[in-house]
Length: 569
Figure 1: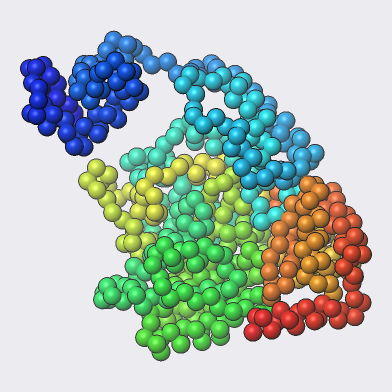
Figure 2: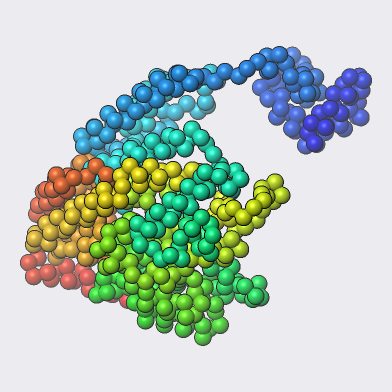
């Protein structure tokens, strides 16, 4: 439409048409668009007394490209220059990893530190690779949190590995948008194969296998767990509302424990589920959700005329790595028609270990969907969330919307119908590189190594009378605190530990009590780093206990706990 109008405008000028007729042609939105198109020339033209809107446009705007515009475009980085830069970048990455043990884990910067160091406008002419690297080192790196540091014990890990980095390089070079089989046969089929590989390694039920797209279920790679939970909830809603009055969507109810990740509530916000039940857990149950609590909540909602739709269990909660009893909970939830999803974002990698699978991953044959993040603990760089469904029908029912220009023939699986976005990266290539270049045996050794390091740290905590374990040590997470001290003492301990820059930990709240978390999981962490972390924490505890005191009989701590319990009640 703009081009047609431009042609009419050109004809108007050629015939020396003036006055209202000509102005009418270029009025309204077209006039505004023409002002945008002439852009930077406007100021110069006005200074010469010329209206840039009624002036003759460049020839290329009228379908007459200039000779200059038709010359071969030359990129600022050639293939040979990229080869040279690539070698240098790999050297920089290797040097960075070698320096990680000596780096502060957290940067010593304040919000806004970068604002005055980045120009307000991009450069008109290309900067050199050397100039860019200089600014990376001098301006950007001072603000980096070193997630791959051997002394990074905060949050949950975000593993990186050299095989995954190499795969990301190749994926970026290919830059395929694999929304359908037709758009990218290899990324679609490799993703199915890798999801089946993972399912086999983790001992998942046969219903979760892709089997080349022939079965009702299968796996798909999402970006994050937040996306996976939204997708699962959309599928649950589609199934729950089949054959029902559309108004019944206002009656839908979703359930999870009060230890579930915040992505559960966010998914309910996004999907439009108004009735959200965050069910209570107790310390004496190790923060696991009990089936009778879920049953009581569902029964109450059914009696109120509501429609239970979705239940999310967790294997490895963020606060304490609590493990919900999936089998008994699934039995309760499915009896009322709920879709059952299991979030094992961090802990799911441990399912590669038969002993962990037997202890914590029972009951998955009774659930509708299951997800975990290989980018957390399986050496696959962010982002990569593996989601499986036993039946993809409700998923595609909720998410399939194919305009004519995206339609293809045949029965191939199109992953655009399994996710929110249309476009998707070649993420399965990372899994392909990692699973092949490590092998299952090496991956199992890696996971057992981290669990053993966490056990060493937990044993050190348990042997020190100043400390207590706040929850059972599971997987690579240890939750601990100073005992018999006011809350402020544990807050001061965390501040002292992080303030030195040699470690990075975070805290959580368990039963209203301030609790420190140490999560072993960096790909570079060894026994020496865990021992050094304990020594640092122990030294900091000396000064904190001296400052706040510590009652031998626990009276002060008991008083604080009683006060907190009163607040919770």
